[in-house]
Length: 324
Image 1 (cartoon, helix red, strand yellow):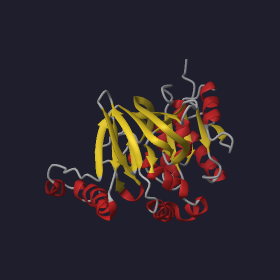
Image 2 (tube, rainbow, N blue to C red):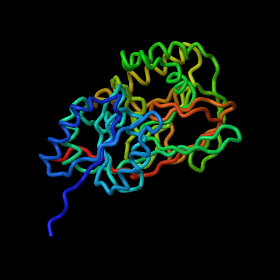
Image 3 (cartoon, rainbow, N blue to C red):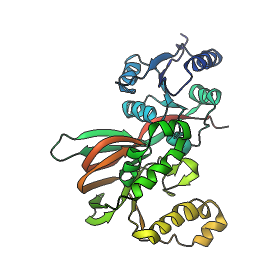
């Protein structure tokens, strides 16, 4: 008895994509690779993808394509985590953070659909974050790239959405200037895995599953998307010279020297600087002296005074280009 043709669903953010052009490309891809007609599900302002992904799973599809920005990808992945149903990425928008970290092609619908319908599956880790503000109920969300609290999240909160739509990531430059004028630091207590509790002051804490940001910025140089661990950076510069240390570390050492054998030799043993500290582990618990904005994969998730994150290793399968 012949096997039934496979069927995909596509969760589409209609604001981010050219829907008519995508429908035509999708029909061509289905015909070329012998898949059934794809289940088309559009996100809404009220539901950015959770309900649509659950509907796709109820329909028994073999794959879910996320067509939109980082928020759409994160929402779809949150529902697919642990189900065994793979996600394929059709990146759009300004960030495309997971696609960048997996070295997937951007702005090429045809190649993205070829990867979706014919590619291999790569298991990757998913970060899970529990957030709580005061005595409020705990909120739980998944993330694929980074979770941030402090200056990082405040920068996103200060970014003009209209300017971001026109200028992309350059819109964050204005927000950075606004946030840097805020001299308030975080008073934090944190515990990594089963280690002792540490107390310190910091400007921002980033918990990463991936290490690269747009503009080829390598923030977490040792982060690997499938190693079962987080890479964490605590930024705590003091004054202008502290920020200079941070910039040298991120843009010169991570962004230039680390990318070549000669550069790595010049760096030596990876000298730590006080303004920027790296940690690595599977579970990270953080408490702050006051409620702070939290971001997951570039989207704000309200304020929290307590944050617990852990790695769900290999919990999501992602379609990647087929190996030659």
